[in-house]
Every structure is written in C-alpha cells, then in structure tokens.
Length: 267
Image 1: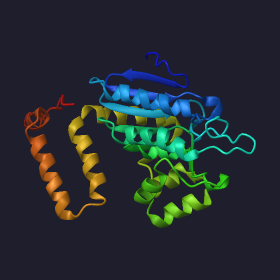
Image 2 (image 1 turned 90 degrees about the vertical axis):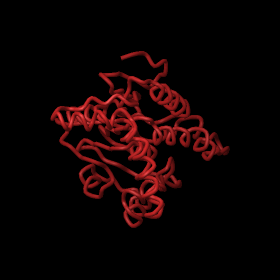
Image 3 (image 1 turned 180 degrees about the vertical axis):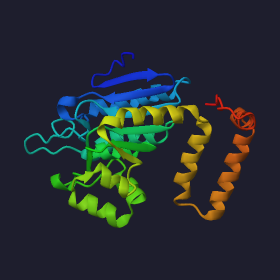
C-alpha cells in the first residue's frame, strides 16, 4: 500500500493487481468534485504503471458509492442561486468515466454495498461488476428532479435493454444484486462471506491473462454494438493480425503444446 496524497482514496497493490478504495464511509463514499478529479488522476497514474495488469475499484464501509454528495459546494444550491450541474459532468464525471472505460488493463467493480446514482455509473464503466448479494443498485436521479448521468443513459440500455433501462431510470426503485445479475446488468452476485475471495480470484485470473488480448476484446465488443457484421469481421482481422505477431500468442501456443500454464508478459 502507498499514500495516494488524495484524501478519500486508498490504493494497494498485490502482485499485479491494483485495488482502489473510495474511502469516505461516513457518506457511503459519495463523490465530490475534488474526489472525482483526484480519482481520475489516480487512475491515470495506475494506467501508466507497467506492473499493474488488473484494477479493482471498491468502496469502504457499508457502501460502494452513493453517487454525488449533494452537500458538495459544486452542486448544492446557495439560497436562490442554482449551480451548473452540466459543468460538473463536462469537467468531472465525463473525464472520469472515459478514463475508467479506457483503462489499459481489465477493470472490476467490487460492489460491496449500496451503489446509487453516479455510483452505479462508475460500476458499469468497469469491465466486470461483482456485487455482494446484500448490495443493491439504485438509479436515484428522478427523485431529485434530474436525469441519469455519468454515462448511465448509454450503459443501461446496452446491459439491460430499453424497457428495463427505462423502468430503472424512471422509477428509481432499489434493484437487488441478485436481480441485477439475473437481468444481465452485472457479472455476478455472490454471498457476502465469499465476496472478497471471489473478487480476489477473479482479479488474479484476469491479471494472468494476455492484457492486450483482453483490452482489444473489450474494444471490439463495444464497437460491435454499433458496427455492421462486415465491419466487425474487418476489425477482428486487424486485431488478430496484430496479436498474432505478439509474444503472448507464441507463449500461449507453446504452453498449450507443453500442457502448462502460460506466462503472459505483453502489456
């Protein structure tokens, strides 16, 4: 573990897995403008580290992230003076979500408790979402007269379909982790007692695989949502051509032939 210099954030590295913890448990890890900026900077620093091959994002205490802290001066109305919420999206949440979505290593959202509002958006910006069975997701925006943001209107229809995305967004009802798994919104809901071990094993598994192959798989699946079949086939050919010349492919084939576990090194 090392000091991040950012209040409200902790980071520790175990082997090739970096774990960032949102550390404002007294507010269920609600986000402030400063925390958003600091988290983006910390993610940039992790992205630049060649020793990291997987990132886990989680929360301290009872919650994963309760979304935006409405007491934050950046969003709290002062008397009759309203705040420009769009500015916080443009300068804060947009860079953060794009950074998470484009990390050069696979990412896991370890949802240890309640995820609400932008907290759900942060989780869905990660590659895989694993949640405690006792956790829940809430699209809480309409209850305060707002729309889902931080990428929610893009991510939710893609993972849940239009009908379910609208239901979740309009009604703002609490969605259990188990139901979220059944709907395909998250990868897995696991028993609370097994949560830490499951996340650790999953992170270790991802960190042992070929990082370039994982990242290109993510990019191709995202692009495939809006591309034609021909475009997808062309993109697959280009990616496979590049990966076929890499050291990881040679190592994978050799390990397969020798019936051993491969040791991938490309990053």
